[in-house]
Length: 335
Image (cartoon, rainbow, N blue to C red; front, side, top):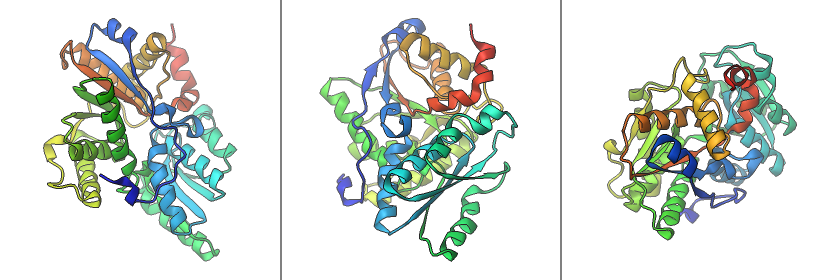
């Protein structure tokens, strides 16, 4: 694959580290756990959306956009990173924030990512839960056009065939790192939501013939819907890259048993996972994505899903800023 065929800006801190989690592996009694540190991508405290934004923002600049419009939940990590790169590029940024958790908690509505969005100068527009937020961006875009501006719309999570190229690139990067250190990766586990990260990884590994299985731990949709979303996007990415043979449906696997009460709603497993990663590895997860992804990983290890000698890589998608929006959740469970 020759990703240089596609416009790309270079602002992510890459490659991100691949590190062993020896203390956590011992605490859980195996397998051998590793972490791919995409919390270290550098932009606005880092996170997985930075890789996607390198391709998305390059496309926006190439099209002459002066206003970036995107959407997400109130504590969207994607929104925070989009606001930051828009500020760096001198572009106006409008973020539509859906109160998907349906809370009036001041920490959730004003702290964490929301505070950083405002520091980066983004215009924030609140929306109630339940609407089609990608559709909601259209009248905002028309408003910008009527004022003489040139909007560029980015879907939630930056998850389209352009954004997913960032995780095709991650698949290339991780395969190279594993080859260099002689590490056989038996499974890659990560939190899956808007589908772009998993779709990019699946497509990248398939094109490389790496035989690295990807397991997405769902944070929002039921299993059938999540896998359908990932597969459909992976097929579009494969078409964009002209991957021979396309994507085998069996390569798209999601476990959505750890969503709990819904997107962004805390679970006991998430709280335990955040605490275990912090106290055994000094790593900060987030409450919505990486925390629930790690909760799934930990539970599957305890259930014997993996062999004791397997090498399992957990992709850390970042988002620790969101911890400050969930202060009460962690104060109650702290010991």
